[in-house]
Amino acid sequence: MTEATLATEGKVSGNTWVFPPAFVWGAGTAAYQIEGAAAEGGRTPSIWDTFSHTPGKTSNGDTGDMAVGHYHRFRDDVALMKQLGLGAYRFSTSWPRIQPGGRGPANIEGLDFYSRLVDELLAGGIEPVLTLYHWDLPQELEDAGGWGSRDTAFRFAEYAAIVADRLGDRVKTWTTLNEPWCAAFLGYASGIHAPGRHEPETALRAAHHMLLGHGLAVGELRSVLPSSAQVSIALNVAQFRTESDSAEDQDAYRRLDALQNRIFLDPLFHGSYPADLKADTAEVTSWDFVEPGDLEIISRPIDLLGVNFYSPMLVAAPLSEQDRAEAGDGGDGHGNSDHSPWVGSSDQVRFVRQAGERTAMDWVVDATGLRDVLLRLHRDYGPVPLAVTENGAAFDDELDADGNAHDPRRISYMRGHLVALHEALSAGVDVRGYFLWSLMDNFEWSFGYSRRFGIIHVDFASQQRVVKSSGRWYSDVIGANAV
Ligand code: FCB
Image 1 (cartoon, rainbow, N blue to C red):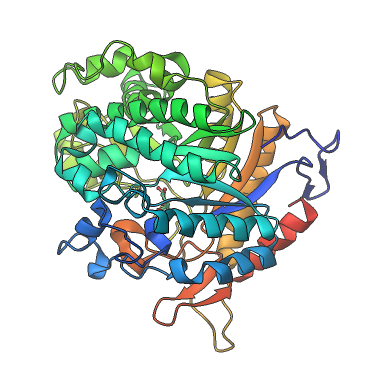
Image 2: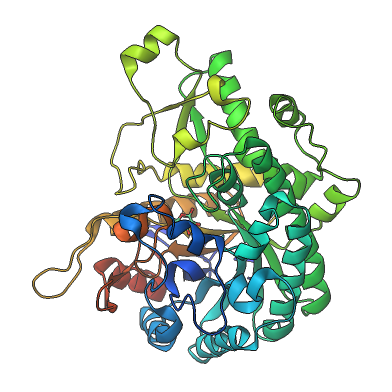
C-alpha cells in the first residue's frame, strides 16, 4: 500500500470526509471462518476443528466443517466483492490445507486453491492481502506442544516460505499473524479459544514463540518475495481508558497496556520486552524462553502495522471486597473477564461497564477509540504506516419479507469509525487502508454462527448470499472515496 496523501487541504467539506486518493478500501475474512471443506483437498484438522468438535466449547456445538462453503463458492464470492467495488480483500490461508500436519512438503491441492483465488481476485481488479496465520494451527503441532513449543516458530517460518514461494509473484501485501494476543491468551490461558488450555505460563511462552515465528517468517518472506512486497502483522491493539487519574487506576491501565499491547509492540518496534511486564509476571515465569538473538529476529523491520479495533475498554483498580459484593460483575464483553485469570495482574485490575449503545457482542460502540488508538500508535511507535485491518460490528440481522437485510446500525457504526479514522489522518497519522470485518456472515469462533458481522447476509442452511444495506452503503463510500 503506497502512502496516502491527503486529497484536499480542507479535507472535510460540509458533512463529507474525503479520503486520500490511494486509500485502500477492503473487507476481510479468515480461512476457518468461511471455507468449510474441512476434510477436502488434503486438509488435515487444525486446533479449531478439534476445539469446535469438543462438546461445550462453541455455541450450539457449531463447527467450521461447512462454514459458509467458500472453498467451493469462491468465484461467486469474488463476484460479490467486485459488485461491491472492493479495492482489496484480506483473507487467510489455512496452514493444514497447505502443509498438512504442519511439517513436510506442501500439499499442491491446497496451494492450488489459493492460487485460483488470487487469480480470480486479480482478474476482478481486487488486491489480495494475505494473512498466513488466523488461528488454525495444525493439530499435530499442538500435540507436539503447540505454540508453547519453540519448534512451532520454526515450523511457521517454513510454512510461510512455502506460501510465499507459490503466491509471491502475485500477492504484494503479506501479514504474518492475526491477533497473537487472542491466539496466545484466549487459547492458552483463559481457554475460550482453541486449543482451550488454562496455563498462564504457556500463554506467555506462546506469545513469545508467536513473535519469534513472526520474525523468522519476515526473514523468509524477505528472501522469497520481490523487494516491493509489504510485510506486516495485525494486532488487536486495545484502547484502554481509565475511570480516574488516581494512581491506582493508572496502575491498572499500565498493567493491562503491558499485557495486551506493549508485550507485542515493544519487542516488534523497540527490540525489548517492557520491564514492568516482566516484573508484573515474575511469579508466573522467569522469561527463560527468551533466548539470545530472539529480539533481534522479532524486531526485523516491517512495512505496515495492521490494527484490529472494535471497541474501547474502561479499566480501574479493583474494588474492595465490600464494594465488589455490592457492585456485582463489571465485565464489559471482549471476553474481558478472560484477560484476568492468568497472570499476576488479575487481582489488580477491573473492567468497568461503559454506558452507551452495544452490539450483539455486547461491545460498546465508541468510535473515538479508533481515532485514539491510531494516534497512540503513531505517537509511541511511529512512523510505521498503519492500516485498519479489522473493524466492524455484529447485529442480529434478519432477512425481511422481500429478502432484503436492512442493517442501519451497522451503517452508523461504520460511518462513525470511518470519520474517526479520518480524524487520525487529518492529525497526520499515516493510515493506508480500511478493511471492514467482515465481508460476509461466518463462523464467529466460540460464538459459532450466532453472531453476524457481515455486510453480506448468509443463510447458513442454503448458503445463499444477500448484500445487506451496509454493503450497498459501503459500496457508495468506496465509489466516492468519501464518507
Ligand atoms: C477478531 C478476529 C476475527 C473476528 C473478529 C470479530 O478478534 O480476528 O476473526 O472474529 O474478531
